[in-house]
Image (tube, rainbow, N blue to C red; front, top):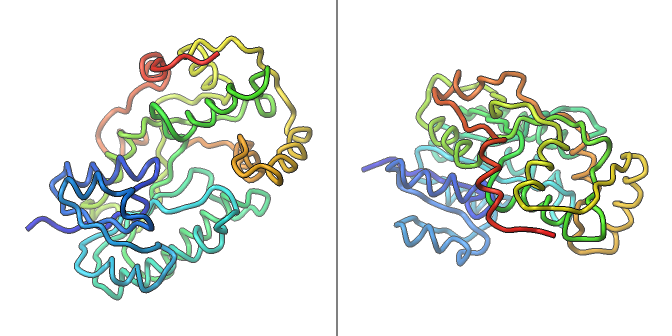
Length: 302
């Protein structure tokens, strides 16, 4: 029988593509989900769905049993309601211990380009600490770090949609010159799935981005052009925007952006190699500028 692969975070923005890709690749899929009904699409495709939380040792121990490998996409980008410590740092350690005890042969851990011990960036520091915590358990692992992932909805697309649907202006944080190396979500998922069987990637931490380095402003303008956004753009310096976002985040349950996300947005998210995907996974990813013209044109926003 085909190997059984456990996917953590399968119901999330990136996890959905990875989980379906695991099935497409011929593996048996197992999913651990807090809300099993959210994983119904995987069950229809023959996946085994277990109820539980990736921060619970007992749930992880049960989910890892009988699996050849685990793919973890579990993380939070804001320090509430779940904390960076619980989800981004402790959960990888618990996963490594559970996987090792269950005889899992490999963990593919999805992280973020720019993960760093720099305490100024709480989210990125928590991702770095989570990578270290997983690796200290001794479980064979590959860490794949990504920049922005592009999709028809969700991720950076959802943020752009929120930013142009509120108020008379489209806010560009800072000068809009923060660089990123976006990669189409399904192509990023292809890298994750390929890494499952790649013994040559054991012990490696790899930054992966698309074939273009783009500023935040450039990426937003691709979105705006495709959606027909005509609102005036207003660039707000981060020192002025930070206290406003902090106040809004304190009173709104779902703010456009949280303070943690804003601070993370100010950091560069570049792999440093335009051929990182080709070099490591032997295919050329799509051009974000060309992709945006067709995929972001699905709905028009005033």
